[in-house]
Amino acid sequence: MTVGLYARVSDDKKKSDGDKRQDINRQLDILRDYATRSGYSNYEEYVDDGKSAFTEDWNSRPSFKRLLNDCRRRFIQKIIIEDMTRFSRKLDAGLLLLKELGSLKVELISLKEGEIEVTSSKGWLQSSMLLMFAEWGSRIQSEKVKTGMLKARNLGKKIGGFRLTLN
Image (cartoon, rainbow, N blue to C red; front, side, top):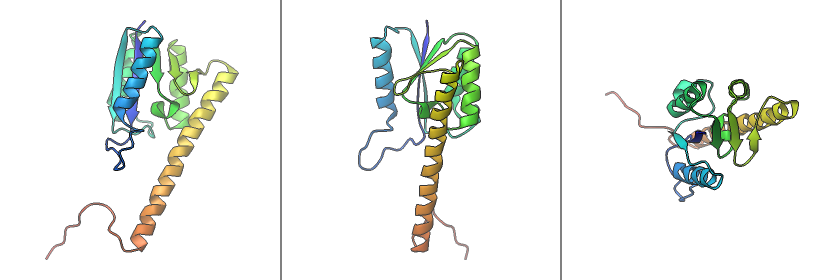
């Protein structure tokens, strides 16, 4: 059995305080360790660094698109992710994708949430809730950023990149 290890971060910059919560290598280490401990010696790594999961366009995540294509051609039978937010942050798109993976008999395992499936009513409910919270978290973060930028602008601080002035 070939297993797909999927790691993703939306921002390829490390935080100034050295916090490595979103470090892609940390995710990969965790996924590799789990695969090894679980006896999956045959695995393929798929990494999207600096790519958002708050999208319905899988083309914007090249490794995720490759992973899905590998599932469709039956090369990958199981996907392992650190948590559901690495997979998708869009409820509707995520559920459609989970449904497709279910029809392909591809298992999805989240190290934080366990096995994810939509074939049973319990699995559908669990998946829906996980994806709903993932999308909600993204929306909350977006609101915080917008509020912070508005506050900074109102205080006269420069927002964004450089400005060109014409003489």
